[in-house]
Image (cartoon, rainbow over all chains, first blue to last red; front, side, top):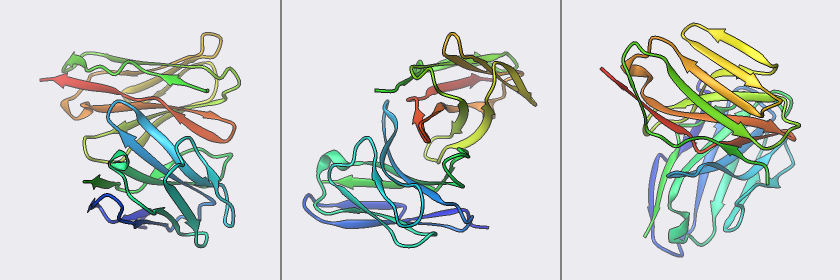
Length: 113
Length: 109
């Protein structure tokens, strides 16, 4: 089993460019999450999808959009990247909202210049 | 705003000693508590979960929960250099995980 696969691993963008981070899980989990991790600030929730067909804002949603394409895939889009979005992004999946062991992708290190 | 607080460290512990990591949380209704380990440049991985007051042991790791004091801790016995990592405390609140900023642990050989 691959678990949670996240691409790309590294990305450099210029201010104003757009990009989509891809995430796929093969564990048949219902819930998927996008976090960003900045030094000294822990994991902050950007968006989550409790189940296929639903998405909700987290703590820091501004500047991002998401799509739950199907049960396996949950993508994060930056429409117009800003330097403040320089961070490490993690996708995670959880079987359902009653079971909270989270499984993480390997992360995307994004730099916006 | 629901919060989870951890001392950022670094916490430096000699090899073979006990490392003690602490976490406090603000939501009194929280029912589930987790410790994740994150090596530098890697993603977090679950090492312990605890749901009721008291101690839970798994190998060299012991999680302790005190809901009255809103406090959860992680003890690592016989610390090894491979335990050097950042330890994240996570608390389940209203079907979401609320994360602490993590404590960096350094085990000195």
